[in-house]
Length: 467
View (cartoon, rainbow, N blue to C red):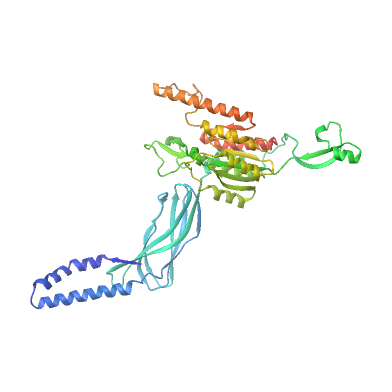
């Protein structure tokens, strides 16, 4: 509780107070007695007003939600309820400190008139989050006038409201809606299923044309006749997405404003001379992970999530269901790039120890650094024979084949930039070839195609029964 002078006290102190003090000092007659009496009366009134008003808003309570979920760049609402068990408050002023990562759509400070005893007043705050992450409303400030009006009584009320802002997947879903996410059963047709499956179904007598590999020799010996194992197509498979949030994941992605993607890359500090919007590679990794979780749910598969930098941070076993999707979403929405080098050996050891079943592992990592790629090659043999691995990263903006541009360079500087980009593209192609020898496919899509590329790879693997 804090008490500060109101404007009325300042007016009393300067307008009648200064003349009264002047008379008290310089006048020797009756006016000196009158001025002294006036000053004593005003001082007594001010002290009494202070004493009786200190606890004026001590009983005011504020009800707030414990948890509010929202999506980046979409308006969200926080409902606050002011309750006054004490005496009538003719004027209650409130103010809420808000993080700079929110755009304020409604007033965050205001005045409640005539809040009577036992009454409740609701205030709806409308905010638009500009960045994903976890935020808290820790306190709220209220203020009211004292009984006479000489003082302003202020109080800070503690709140326990947590704001969880998740990535906005609307644009990614629109890109994939017609192909992957929103497909129903209309117009479906039979498609030949490649592969024979890996789940054991039953034993039966050997028939002409059966593969010798499928003969169960122990059952054949028991029955004294050839017996063949039959398999069924696996309907439920385990899919894991591994997200690297080390230093390379913080690589900037610059999008010109004229591409119309401002809503997708909405950041308060993300501009370069007003011509570009800046995000990071990690943002696209997280978008891709959530999109893959949604697609796996629709395909009937189990989905797991792993995040790491110089150590394994989170390891969520593969499950299915809406509740499990929310668990993964809560696990990744606070990830930020860390200024450390990635360490792949603890990751591979954890995957080898915790994954007992052959799984599809989609790794979202950046291998543009040769040292990092070499480290990855050394750790990969720990799991590449047990699991099917796909690696995806966002292609660096200038890493492209020479003469692939539609227009010729305008200056010598652009020529050197093209040569540097070609060398980087060639290094990435060599890294991809080395991974291919280890049975790992490397994807190098542009930032807007990362989700589409990863989902296409996953569906191809599932249709061909490669897991």
